[in-house]
Image 1 (cartoon, rainbow, N blue to C red):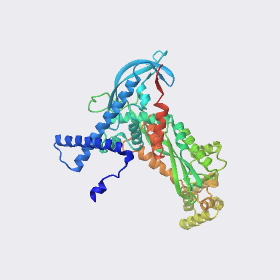
Image 2: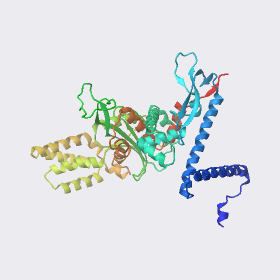
Image 3: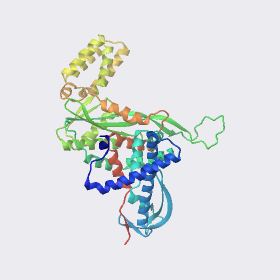
Image 4: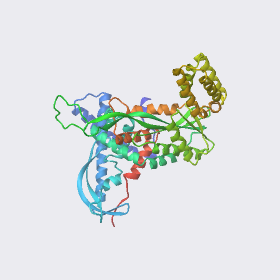
Length: 483
């Protein structure tokens, strides 16, 4: 019975293919067995698995290397037309192409545009094969994923533990930055392609948007002439220029699709470096809103975040400029608002717990409850409180004057809308802090931009589409012999 279970079902339509696979498997097994014997290794399954993966890597590496060489041979060294423009031979050299299974060493020609003195150098092999920054397509996608997930040390360790053959960490770091920079440069076009295939979750009832900021450690050059602490021991290599690390505020934005019960169905997360500012982030958010509303115009749009004036100015300005958004509701994050009301209740000459319970109950039941609460605080201001308490009450009076139109929770909560900015607050931690605030990390704006671009596509489940689109936009071309 065990023998019958181990045999695949007969299929006459694929008999030739099955025979070829069986022959390949037999040859592959023989190579693995010989290598185990030559190494004096045992015959355990674990040892066989490791050796089989090693052989498979080398077999795949040679296959890919031959495939690239065949492309070079087919192209030749005569004049070529690349996207219809004439190019002539510049020089021939050998290059290392990085892949998941090791380096692919290929001799290939480079070309220059005819009629242009010292024009830019192009490599027809890379354009026809879709190589990205000297990396194969599959390896480039894995590097982008690694940059979105963590640093080059983590990626290198993961590749080794997966029995792959990565290049050095320095190569991974440089490749990560170059690919991330290319992704950030073409973000609008890449995201537009990704959105075309995205369907609105069936139970979507509300679009919740929010913007916030979170600190990121940025490495900045010290002004020239700044005194630097001298080392007691002489430095062998040349000392790098003096820098300092300052925490600057990066921007975070989210677009959450929520059902009628207030449950999150999908969240799109975006971030922008302190140096780049929020313009691209807001554009991406509004494009998500537009895509959702075009699929279902009846969706409610809700802006929910903390009370920061700058953030509200940015978000409401973007919503007002978006033609598909006819109206939207605004809410201050409920826990944030309650902390302000608690400060006011604590300053009032009354039992703080009882007063807060009364206010919370009123806010749950009536949209105009905040007006009564504000009136109570204004009344208490005329009761002659000592200066420290009066200052608190004045601050909360100002807070409610500026924000009470965003504190009408009852109707929106009854409609199944979330009254907290958990999606945005969570993104500050899971999206930015997790990736960018590890022990000892510090960033230049360019490196941070590249990492955030990779992480954006990763957490929004757009990574494969993003890399494929980038490859089509930047790293492929129509290469033909010049007739």
